[in-house]
Image (cartoon, rainbow, N blue to C red; front, side, top):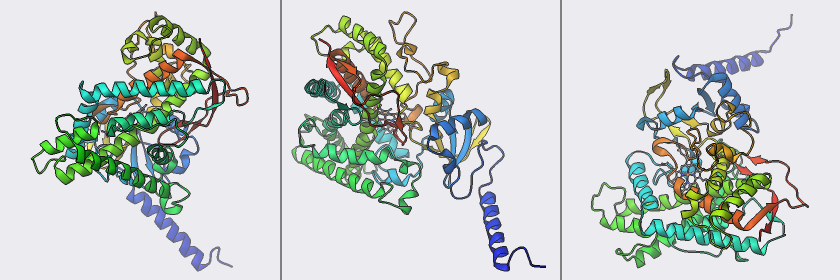
Length: 494
Ligand code: HEM
């Protein structure tokens, strides 16, 4: 009788079985570890995520509950998809680590804010937050920058009335420019025929933020050019060149009694620091300043401009929401005045548009992953030290049990009280994350969204481009979700 397998086939089969056995033995879990879909060797659950990871993860949430586990390649990951649990877990100091993502590590190298942990993260975050929030020179000039950028945007749209306008990328110029002004005090004419260098370099960086490379960093070893790794490294280096130049110029001309922008404020803090162990001390301070400048830019630019592009798209498809906001704007602001942040509290419908845009678009569907710093028991589950924690903001913002059967519709009224005269906050809206590492640009981002959206609706109707009509919202998945390219037109209201 002929044997079923040759000796070498049998040896290979045995080897493969041994490898699979070894994989499952190595990755076996404590019985208190959260349940989840079965991973396969090397890829974990990555291949199951398919083209629409948010949908697949919503199904896993339905099946395994608010806390479940997956494997992203060789990284154990626990997903939390309940807003109360996210808030509770992320308020705990043991959840404030960051996994070492090789893509994000390129900028900052563990310094600054986004990728930093421990003392460095705490000190840099506290300082930056204070400068962005405190009423003072920087805070009041930020308001002025935003109003100026909004008015440049309006002039750009006025010149393009009746013409086809590309929705994606429309807001890169004003958003990047306002961030660059806050950081460096320098301003650029993004509306000029020659694109400013800072805008070119920022746009190159953000292409990777919205690519799949963030979720599957191993792809950079397979085809670095194809998956955007080469461009990411190059564009971050060229962006760093600009920040380094700006820091050198600021250091040369610094007037410590009259700091003008974020770099000035930071340099003054460095001058005042005598404690050699401080993250602001001399060389350490300079390296952290470079990292923070990159953090503010990378975390702030694509997120804000993608959300604004979604707002245009939602409004394009919702004439009634435009009409209601315009009625409110006419009553409160009148036809001629310029919109300012002081109008915000009197424009609840416009603010509700901002909140509904943040919910429905959820441009950061899984926020930024955290890492557990120690073994922690949480609602009966073991969250082991070093495990990655992902908050599934998309699932939270698209759960019909929370938002009702029209969860996928754009309905700003869900953020208003019954008489539609006041904003009613919703505890499940956590677009900026929650807890100790929540977004430190939340206030700035909300001000930017409000001012830009209100200024556009005050002046224009957002309309279909008859040559390129849009029938539905289509998105492009990434660490930052964007709308697929679309066209629209504006017409003057008066
Ligand atoms: C619509 C706009 C924005 C959205 C939706 C957004 C959302 C987020 C989210 C979900 C996180 C992760 C929170 C976590 O780790 O759990 C985050 C972190 C962060 N964001 Fe934003 N963001 C926006 C705009 C901005 C702006 C304008 C800035 C700065 C100028 C900024 C700076 C940061 C920084 C520095 C972090 C890291 C915080 C830390 O690690 O402690 N973001 N953001």
